[in-house]
Amino acid sequence: MNDHIGTDGGAVPAGNGRPPRVVIAGGGFAGVEAARTLIREDVQVTLIDRRNYHLFQPLLYQIATAILQPSDIAVPLRRLFGRHGNALVLMDSVVGIRTAEKAVVTAAGKTLPYDHLILAPGAETSYFGNDAWRKHSFGLKSLDDAARIRQQVLLAFERAEMTDSEEERKRLLTFAIVGGGPNGIGAAVSLVELARDVLARDFRHIDPSMPRIVVMEAGERILPASSERHAGYAARVLREKKVELRVKSEVSKVDEAGVFIGDERIVAGTVIWTAGVKACPVAEWLGVEPAKGGRIEVTEVLTAPGHEDIYVLGDAALARGRDGKPLPGLAAVARQQGKFAARRILSRIQGRGRNDAFRYRDYGDMVPLGRAKAAARLGRMELTGIVAWVLWAAAHIVLLFDRRRQLMVLNNWFWAFAMKRNAARVIVEQRDLTLYHARSDSRDQSAPGRGP
Ligand SMILES: Cc1cc2nc3c(=O)[nH]c(=O)nc-3n(C[C@H](O)[C@H](O)[C@H](O)COP(=O)(O)OP(=O)(O)OC[C@H]3O[C@@H](n4cnc5c(N)ncnc54)[C@H](O)[C@@H]3O)c2cc1C
Image 1 (cartoon, helix red, strand yellow):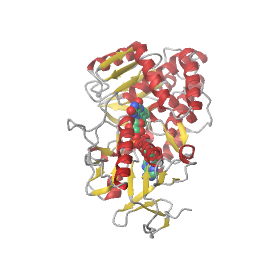
Image 2: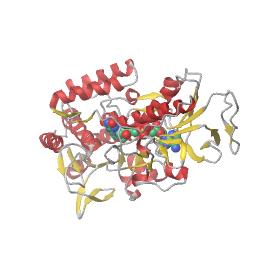
Image 3: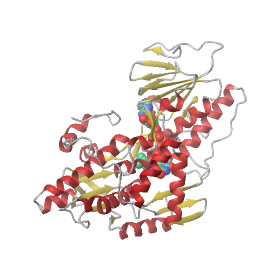
Image 4: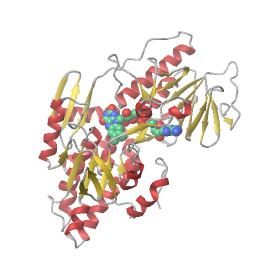
């Protein structure tokens, strides 16, 4: 059945008369979109992902803030492709590529030959070389990260309720968010709503004004990719909600007691790091020099330079728009690239030799700002407030995978936004987070169930 899988060191040679083999590394937005297009044709698709699910990252912060449950935003890859006879899903990690042999090498020791290869492993949290900061802060990139933030926030309230020390209560209820991009801002607003409107009222020794949320941004303003108007609107929303906003405030150190901005220490029980990502090590796999952020600067047809049959897509790629500027790391970019690469592969297989360049269609962008507020750009039209929020909500519901998840998300939003009762507030495991931090240096970010 799996005649396209060889054992280590021995790629299965391409045979005549068999369907062309396309291997896809990464079941994120780019990989899934490519696979969906390819499986409709007579092509053997092998999709490899280190997880067994596709994750809808734009709603990850809602897992961290107890609005949604993990299964609301993650769909098993086998659910998407398991019933297609020409698709093989493997839960495995790509660790290298033998370009001369045209084969992918995996952590489980498989060698997978390909005729066409799509590399879309996305990006991971980057601490800009300060990797020691990782153990004192929480990234927001995986389901595991988001679930740990939720656990940490809920435990912070439980411990604040019990402590006799005002100082300790203050520390526990201070949440520092590093990074004023859409993820940091979305998380900050959602966290302040959870802390002040939902959690604080359920405790006897916590006053709703006590939780302190501080957002630190190194640049001149928050939301650097959005318009001045939208950044100003978001800043106003944050101020109304009493989130402390610190711009031109580069974090110089993160340690067990909180963060430093220059010499100023901000004591915080929880530090959430949303300040940077770097591409997964595609450059290393291909043996090429990476561009900014570890990405591969791709050709205008999204192939790796010098490799006509290897496509690099999504957050792992540095592709340029018509204006020559790098395209942003967005799900929409990744999805459009996935479709483009799949169609180009099909046209080459069918001998049509499509050679037009990839052009990103920018329909707009949206930043959620908590309950019934958002900033949305549709083409050149800019909207704020509840209208923008409705658009944001509709766009996200439509993009969820199936009706069941759409209904679950709508239901959870109703309880969180209308009734102020975030559903996912159960502390599943009383893990000692200090221990978790101390032992997490050697962790594999993606490994499920890591920790003590
Ligand atoms: C918190 C957060 C919020 C966001 N919000 C938005 C938003 O509102 N709007 C928007 O447009 N974009 C948003 N983004 C960005 C968007 O999610 C990414 O741009 C998009 O996911 C990139 O798609 P991708 O296919 O390149 O990678 P991903 O979707 O990250 O998928 C990569 C896949 O590759 C797998 N993988 C990684 N390494 C390996 C390996 N070695 N072997 C096998 N598999 C591997 C991973 O498990 C993963 O499934 C957000 C991102 C985050 C983190």
